[in-house]
Image (cartoon, rainbow, N blue to C red):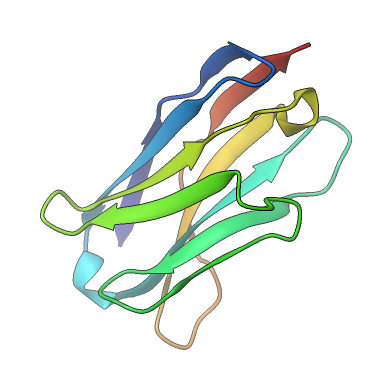
Length: 118
């Protein structure tokens, strides 16, 4: 099993920045990829970004357009998501998720709220 705990959400004005962190524990050796998803009220969960756990490239949702950056620190077992140039439409609960090789995302954190005021 893998446990994921997010932190770093909060309230920020439009144009501001936040840094989200996801701390992984447990059987992390089996992980292949860690990602971030978000869900706004009344909307479906949306892919934000993902990165290989031990290497490999990152990828982003189409809406990101260079505003967000995902990174990992394997020494600390964390994956971070830097959110820049935030817009009110970025307001959502942001979830960290992880998956093992050949599987779908099966491990999820509890989520952290990001609220962007106009």
